[in-house]
Image (cartoon, rainbow, N blue to C red; front, side):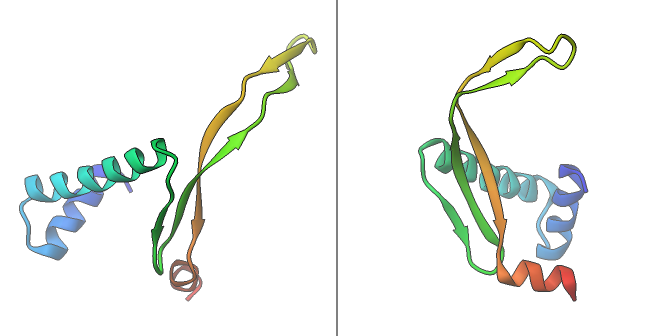
Length: 91
């Protein structure tokens, strides 16, 4: 599903215009992104949790040459599915 398909489905299910649905979807994504950037977690009951995981710097290998390469420390977003989502997918 693409973002445009998601917006169209939200518009249909909520009787909103596509413009209003696009604003709602964008606001939702922006809020999640801003919260994660600030170091917070987003917990949506029955759906799942978004959080940031800190990855330490480490040494890797260049696949072409086999030479060691330093990989910088980084923050990575993670999503854990909630019970409701897991049950819906497995039903």
